[in-house]
Structure formats: structure tokens, C-alpha cells
Image (cartoon, rainbow over all chains, first blue to last red; front, side, top):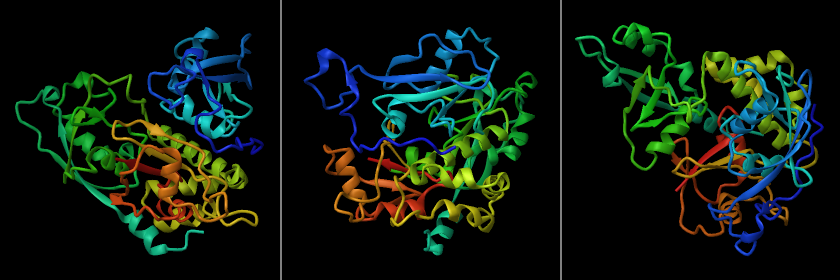
Amino acid sequence: MADGKLAANNSNTQDVKVDQENKENDDAGKNEKVKIDILLKATGNAPIMKKKKWAVDAEKPIGWIMEFIKKYLKLEPEEKLFLYVNQTFAPSPDQIVRNLYECFGTDGKLVLHYCKSQAWG
Amino acid sequence: MANDREVLREIWDGKLPICFQLAQEEIMDIQQPDPFYVMVPRLSYFPLVIDKMKRHFLRYISQENADSEMWLDYNDQPLKWHYPIGFLYDLFCGNDPQLPWTLTVHFTKFPEDILLHCPNKDVVEAHYMSTVKEADVLKHRGQVMSTMQKKDHSQLWLGLQNDKFDQFWAINRRLMESHGDSEGFKYIPIRIYSDDGTCNQRLVSPKNNDGSRKTLQQMISELYPEKNDFNLRTHGIILPLDTPLQWLSEHMSYPDNFLHLCIY
């Protein structure tokens, strides 16, 4: 369903959280440890995670988050995990978190739904 | 709406000559295999066009590797199958054209940390459909894709897979319409790649704050304020910087409905 609201602002990095010590230096240099808040929501038959909100390195790929969830939920290596943005599309595992946050983040965080079977095609 | 049909047709008909060579260390036969030459659509994906090539090389490799996943590299850089072929060429050879494009074929040492696995064409289809959905979320809040029927989705994919322009555009035109009273999409689906392969995707409106049409030049000065001297390439073309984004999105997006631009 198309209920997702796109972030209304058109800015690049101003609401991305920057570590305290790097605050003065806000020209998005590559060495800054920029963290992005993600919210992981279970859907379908997937087990719920006790801790749902995580701050992750903005440059991490989605595939890394999928591996992280699988480990956290103690899934078998051959068990599948699907991840969705806006409850609509499955981002490519090599897409980085920052790109998704910039385009689909809401209220300062990126919401990702995960499930063990294909949910939204 | 995408009205300049000649442009759509030219983009669709773009082809690249490719020369595939089997990696030396894979060759188990006394005889050296001939290279395999083929013309491929720029808009397609490698897994859709390499069946014959794979059969050609299979008898020269060790049989224990015959079932392992084949992958390609250009100049030791593994090629991501989930990017359109023409985009990969522009990224790696845009500044230094090399035709035919000579690629190396591997059956061993799959670069797990760089490439995604592609066991069959269904995986390519799933990736493709997901990217079209993402683009539609940006353009129309996902409303066009969610109101289409399953057979329309299939027609898009089959049109691309079978190189059928009319079949593809009969559906794709609906994804290129503007909704509501506004002329243009909500946001432009666009990915901008630097020559090191890093990809930037940002929310880009087709309009400036004063309602005028936003051009490439205006978008780049917003996203990359430090860049003064740059070129943007897609489909083998260096784009005029005064091109309006809305027109560009309607006419020069890849079949996945994204603009894939190389900046350098």
C-alpha cells in the first residue's frame, strides 16, 4: 500500500546525526562517523526484536543490516530474510543506509520492515 | 508525459558490442577458446544476454566448476549484474571508449564481498520490479504500481527481457504520467555515481522553489556545491546542463525508471 509519506525536506545532511566531536566540521567529510537511526519492525511471521531502534553507520549497506537482523534473531544461514522500505519495495543489498534515509526517512529515522517470506512482492 | 517518441526509440535501440574472453586460469583444454562476440542492448542486464556465451565456454573449463556461478570483470573490476549494461559501460569506459568492450569470464573465486548472487533470472526480475516500485514511490507515492495488475507488471518485465519496445512502453507510459494539477513528478528517481562507483541518491524535486523547471545544473549545484567543473553522462551521451530534470526523467530513465548518471 502507498501509505508511506516521503520526508518533506529536500536537504542533504543537516538532520543526520553527527558524533559530538565532529560537530563543527559539517561538510560531510568521508571520515566522519555519521550515524543514522533505524527502526526495525517485524511483519508477517518474523520474530520481534526486543531492541527495535538502532544507530548505524550511514555508509553501511542494507545487506549488512540484513545479516545483523539474522544474527540477532539467531536465524539459520539458509533462512531467508526480506527487508522493505515504505512497506513497498525491497532495497538492493548494496544500497547504503544514507541514500535510503535521505529519500525515505521520516521524523529523523528510517523505518525498515523485515519478514521471513516475501511480503510486498 | 514522455512525448518525444524518437528519443525513447533511440535510447531503447542503443547497443554495445561485447567481446567475452575466458579467464586464462580457468582454461582446462589444450585448445584456447575463441572469444565470444555479441551485440547487447544497453538497457538490458548481463544475466539476460549471456546464455549462449556461457554454453560456448563451458566445455573449456574444469567440469567441477560447470555448476558454479559465472561472473564477469572489466580490468579486474567485477561487474554488478543488477546494474544495466549500458550504465556499467559508461561508468568504467565513459572517458576512455573501448569497442568492442572486452570482458573476462570467470567460473571460480566469486567475489562475495562485491557481487550479489544471481542464481536465475527470477532474481533479476525481482530486483527490477523492486526498483520500479521504488521509483514510483518517489514519483507518485507508489500509486501507479499499486493500482496496476500483476499482468501489467509482467508485461513491463517481458517487454524489457524480450526487447519489445511497444510492449514495454504500453505500460511504462503510465509510470511516466504526472498526477494531480502539477506538471511533473513529486520527486525525480535519480542516482548519481562517481567514478569510484559510489552512488548518491537524494530527494530531488523537478521544480525550483519559485515553480520554474529545475535543470541539471541547478540540481548539481544544490547537491554538490563544491563542484564547478563537471560532466554528466548517461546512455553514452554527455548531457547538456540546461536540460530540465522532468524531461530527462521521462525520456532518459532506464527501464527501472531511474536516471543513472555518471558524474566526473
